[in-house]
Length: 449
Ligand code: UD1
Ligand code: CA
Image (tube, rainbow, N blue to C red; front, side, top):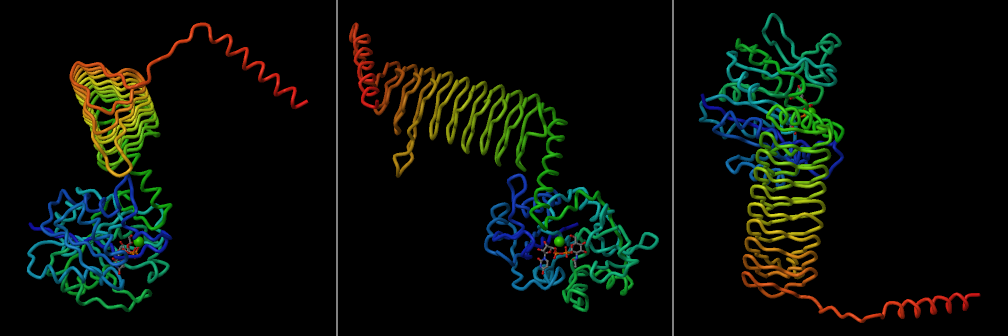
């Protein structure tokens, strides 16, 4: 059966105390909204709407960047969750299928949970959870397996507040039924808002059925404050670490490794302590990432070793068995099989051929203050320590650069390039020089007395 999603993301998120719309705050490198969108992605919904209001243009851009087929509708005044859904429903007039309403600030709902809601038989299906601390959540009024209504905390009696089965906010119903029920919503409640939750009582009053599908509380974690955001981050990291280890990745000190929402790591890879992954990183099987590395937007192939203390930035591509050692930074550079970059080096905007050895302290001078230029190094090259490669420049296969060279001209294959001042040697001069310096030191001391 066809499915449509409506993701509510118009609220200001006042308690975040932020210029940024709440749903654009990030967990594991991705906006909350993107987490909500990806959670539902496995359902393969025919239509997905994001209801934007506060910071609508930024929210629209983030939604479309993640999925260009998303339809963004604007709720210019925030008159409640029912009113928000009402902005999307007219677009679903001819839609035959179910609608699921999700919140953009609730990142961890699992697709299986949404599938269970779609599979439920009742006319209106609500996702609930047993709250350890029910706080100000809406309470679910259930008798003998049937859901009779959702009571918002503000409107609840003492008895109703004692209920611990709470509303996650996720609601599912047939599209045309949802449209009918939402059209009938009013604002006679403590908040003076159109409550989406009121569609349950309305459905019951019309003789229709409603039920609760439940999920573990951690799935329904909603972000309202920066403390909630930190809690969401910690929860994400805790789960991702366990998942990685289950997938055959060794984490020496799991609590110190931070993954991005999309980090992929192959089996038998070993990750040392204090490693941080930014978005867009894949590490193949059998690689080693030593302590204190930072990897973003890069690819590390089978058998490669990185770190300790290495930084791989966007566009860094390490082929099989490459070694990148300590205090090395690599950006937008392709390192072919078996390349070794052991120490204190910057490679940016570069291609490095197979088995080439890059000496300590090498720098690709890729930026002239206005434009970026590329450095191309062939296979089996030996770049001497402290070589400055002033791009654009090419070093041919099998060539060698002398230590301390500043390479400004292309080096042909097989050549030796020395780009440094010739050494001058003066026999016996050292002793005389030291004499002179000592005499000068004594003179200065005397002058002070
Ligand atoms: C809502 C539910 C409550 C549930 C709780 C779970 C209602 C009336 N109440 O309460 O039962 O326990 O979520 O977290 O639905 N939004 C809009 N436009 C609006 C109002 C809200 O887009 O006019 C969006 C918000 O940006 C947010 C979501 O809807 O993503 C929820 O709104 P919020 O005001 O946080 O609802 P709660 O009071 O928490
Ligand atoms: Ca909320």
